[in-house]
Length: 263
Image (tube, rainbow, N blue to C red; front, side):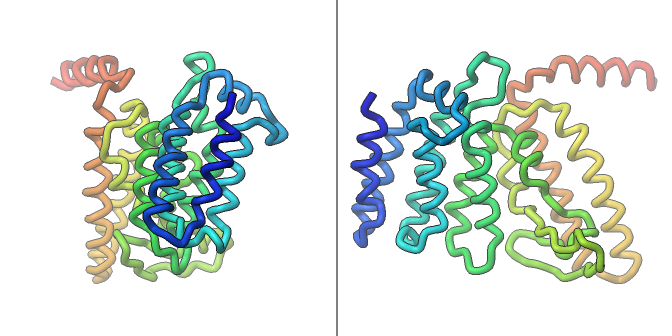
């Protein structure tokens, strides 16, 4: 009953000039977020006017991410978002999307946009929050909201923190910024099914291989190396899909049947 009032009282210390105070405030807010009850979460899901407690909190956090007074508190804000994602894994009826997906996806997408914005200094902290998002929501949900944008139609191909200006097409999609920084974050346990890897990443890796071969044949060795690294990162994601995958046994059976038919 007092979550909103307690959150508001603690929040006032988040823009403190003292780093220890900000850290303690973030830890306190994270503990408060663990008090989001099923009734509070259900009310927030049904709320369309941002009048519920959790909706107000989400809006407050999003505004703070773009607010100059909270610039020094960016790591703490991202830590709070991570806790909110973990504590909103609740599913109203067991099959519907998680509350984190319904309530926090615009906030998570905004953090991904900040991550690739020029001059952003807290990439590691942002990656930590996005990693929690993948752990709770799964890459299928995350990549639907924020595509990797690695196709040559995009203006840049990136590997880690290096950008290579290989393509400069004139069409309207040329400015799509790549999000290849998400690939290493997917190599962890998450709830997405193995079928998503098969339908999404296997064709993508095949395309990357073709782009790599083309770059090598045309003497663009640096670009070919980038594609090679990205292919490796894609296949490093596979083990995360095999952890308690809901359809893993079905996929194993299909593979066994196909093997028998082949031989």
